[in-house]
Image (cartoon, rainbow, N blue to C red; front, side, top):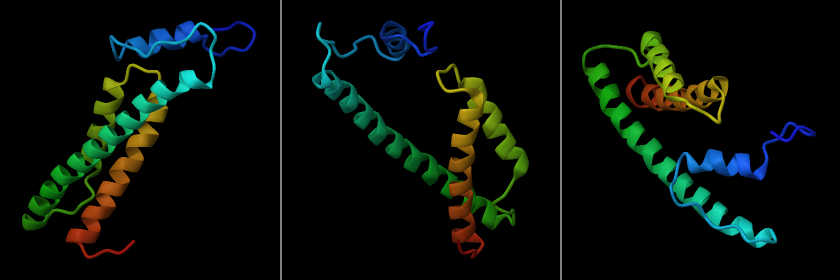
Length: 125
């Protein structure tokens, strides 16, 4: 970290990014706004993957919702939601904090549960 501002240096940020990819976009010797484009393109691609994965996750949750409906279970199962939180926090190795991961997944679980309740329990938003 930069001792004056406690913000990560560019090298520290690049090292963090290198944990996720062997090939990173090149940076010019004289940094400019043009150096942002390849990084933003990667973020855009990751965002599309996240949307696809969230929809895949929701499709699986929909199957679970149908099964729960058929066997008379409610959408909200607190113990399962606690397991989900434990799983995602255990998988987290940063740079997000565990609390940040928890907040993100609380929202994902809430939206999934809400969809399940609307679909199988007749609840409205």
